[in-house]
Amino acid sequence: MAIETIGVIGAGTMGSGIAQSFAQAGFAVRLVDVSAPMLERARASIAKSLAKFVDKGTLTAADRDAVLTRLSVHTGVSFLADADYVVEAIVEDADAKRALFSTLDTVVRPEVILASNTSSIPIATLAAATTRADRVLGMHFMNPVPLMVLVEVIRGPRTSDASMRTAFDLCAKLGKTAVESADRPGFIANRVLMPMINEAIYAVMEGVGTPEAVDTVMKLGMNHPMGPLTLADFIGLDVCLAILRVLHDGFKDAKYAPCPLLERMVADGKLGRKSGEGFYKYS
Image (cartoon, rainbow, N blue to C red; front, side):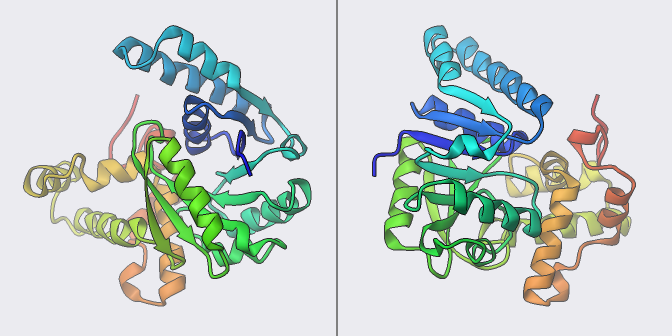
């Protein structure tokens, strides 16, 4: 099946980035969210991101205008009835995603693949809410999506080889590198990353070092582009907490138990960049 129209659900940071990347690659994109203001913010964010590419000389003004023309925004999933491929990027909540996948299963054509941008929720859980488990998979993009090259493609227990090939082909058209992961809690990226972030938070809680000290050690000593606490603020501390809980519940291993400081910060509304304060303050 020729894939020309992409449906993206969720107009947050990840959904906006995914929609932009597909539109830049020449696909018609329908971005869906229940909130009209969120959709307007997403459109403005995408326009701002494209303007930066124009300023850098990597995109012409004409190409920018063409990308924006290929992008449309909608407040209902019914607008995805003729989509050729769908990527879900809503809140990292298993019940919410299952409910959405169940609805999508009745809206889009039977042959259409349903992909989730989940960073930790089992694909099997989402596939079970549909009648097309062979056409359900994970497509975990990295933030910021227009710049990051990696995509984790997660094979569910019943995902077909044909569906995986389609996802890999789409990644190539986006100019991204796809890596296959088995359907295990946290997949590859977050199974490795989140324990490191959690341990960095323990180091701060126990007075081993300040956030600045911990981040500097990892940047200068381990050659990481940014420290784990800066990265946690960028991801969102609430998202980090949710992923750690999935890992802890999935593996029943104490090493994945979220640091109490992380839990307190999330409870206090200190979520990182998006709230203006996390381990650092943002204006």
